[in-house]
Image (cartoon, rainbow, N blue to C red; front, side):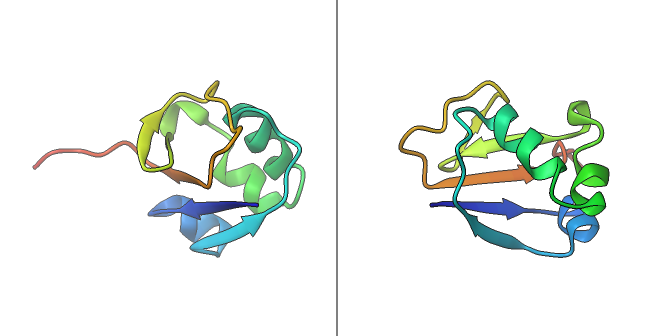
Length: 82
């Protein structure tokens, strides 16, 4: 079971702040591909991966990061300074 968390406009498009998922995905990219097939909301949220960042167990990661042993994956837009 992986806790998948959504922040900012990703959460707004999907309509959920987080969900617990059973998945066969072995990488973050595979998880995204699986999520995109669930519903048009997910397809919209993950349409442009260059506009997203991902954290795996609260560490910034790439979309090719492995999911073995991972408890949490978070998706969010790039952070900006100010």
